[in-house]
Amino acid sequence: MSKERFTSRVAVFAIIRQGAEILLQKRVNTGYKDGFYDLGAAGHLEKSESLQMAMQREIQEELGIDVALADIEFSSIVHKNDTETNLEYINTYFVIKKYGGEPSIMEPEKNAELQWVNINNLPNNLINDRKLALENMVNNVPYSEMGWNHEYQK
Image (cartoon, rainbow, N blue to C red; front, side, top):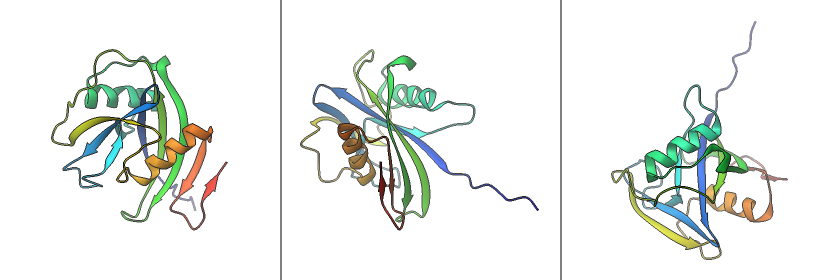
């Protein structure tokens, strides 16, 4: 008898930096954490896409800027058991320091605003695993777990 393998959702997130500032977007009409801040661009991995390819696509779709694959730097993974939605995610975070163009709201039906904020002065309504990913970036932590019966960081 063969075991059915679990399929997890995989998402990518862009930590777009300008010195000590990062770009945030405010979610609206998404059905998840509307009114909360999220990282500059985010989205789901699609079939036949690498993580970096998904990140490049999401940045172009959501912000209208161009990023070379070589400029998409891995930061960390947070394996999240979202207790609010009962969904499990493998969230992959990338740092973007170099890009072409000026970030703009390309999906106004999902993004209420863009805001540059100092990484040391984050808004209180930033989604929790995004806060953890930023802490991971600052502390060079490549992997964390969130929402399980235990919390793991290494």
